[in-house]
Image (tube, rainbow, N blue to C red; front, side, top):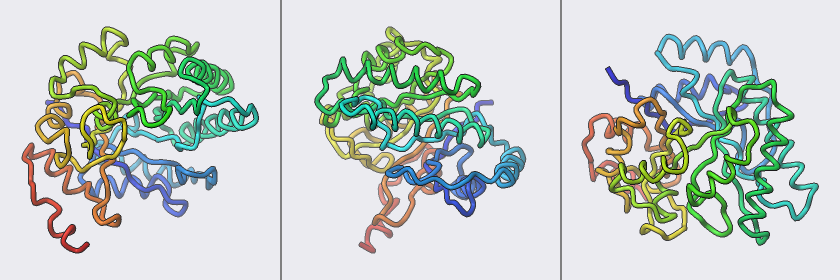
Length: 299
């Protein structure tokens, strides 16, 4: 019987580490989760407690959670695409290397990475910068079996990764082919112009360029914007311009059966995490338009 792999972004704190992540994921009704190992906007990181890691693994084993389904997200301050200042680019490479080491210490495999923004250097130069950065990182961490998943991007500003063609170009240039993969983000795909209503057609388009086996994670977010707006503003599941039926079709698509689906939808009133309610709705396959009315009324 197929077990739906569903979860959300959860909070990693220096006090509880991955143990707190597991507890939060279970409280939300999830069997997978994704987290940053520190604040995504800075480089401050606390030491990882191996005791907490072992405790987390025990609970996960009891609950039937698989380590291979847990996703770490790299901080979005890492930008391998811009090499105008070599020192800053080399720092991004070194910081990504440290993140890979942290993922390995946690006993995990997958690290989602935003490819980066070229900031005026041009797409082709930016892509080559990313390839060079990844090859350097993989060479420095060749003893660590951590896989970087390049995320599909909305195309905001000078973002690279807004098309499957761009991702293919990066992946083709990576020497360690067993260390690279893809994370689909439904909001980003929609905002960059892809039509997700006919998901079979999208997958056909994807597989003409890259093998389906490269997809190891899907961020299942609705969008606040019309298709092709290149804005990247997430909306709660079923409450945006992609819509509930399209997103449910993606979540339950047989081609993605074994792949973790992760919610990164907005907090209600900037304070209330909606994931428990959204996961319940997804499991029921039933849209509840009044899901957040009580919380929104408190604004």
